[in-house]
Structures are given as C-alpha cells and as structure tokens.
Length: 93
Image (cartoon, rainbow, N blue to C red; front, side, top):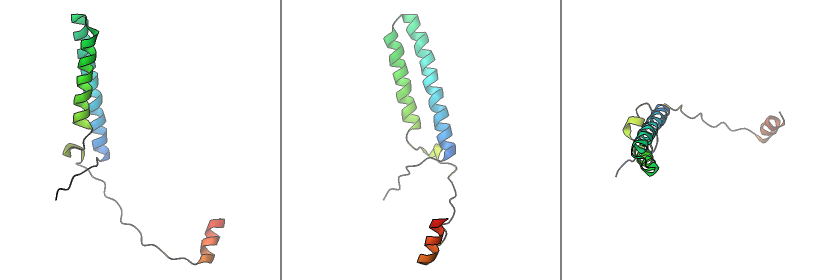
C-alpha cells in the first residue's frame, strides 16, 4: 500500500519553525499596516489568522522538504545475559 511518512528530521524542524515565524510575522506586519490604513482592527485579525493558517498548512505536515537529512541510527547492541548474582551487584552500586 502507501508508505506515509510521519516524521521530520532535525534540520527540517528548524526550517519549519523558521518559515512559520517568517510567515506569521510578515502577515502580522501587513495586517497591522492594512488595518491602520482602513481603520479596521478586524481586518488585521483576519489577515493574521490567514497567515497562521498558511503557516500551519506549510509547516505542520511532514512535507518532503523537511525530510532531506534523516538520522542514521546505530544498530542495537545484542542483549547480554547475566546471572542473578551479577544483577544484584550492579543494583547495589
């Protein structure tokens, strides 16, 4: 079937946060200026809300742009078996 990716790498998370802050700041400034020009604070709120929705649409889903540098995980170590005496010595330390 489909393999839906649900993760972002650390570099992608940094990009998403940077884009989100930029979009919301830009829409906030534009909304404030437009609201001041037409003397309607509600227009400022609507424009800021639109910026928030756009930022959420572009940065919340794990788009492929945010998954370009995946982590290379180490292979798990094989489990070692210990006797009860060794376990109790380790717990005491």
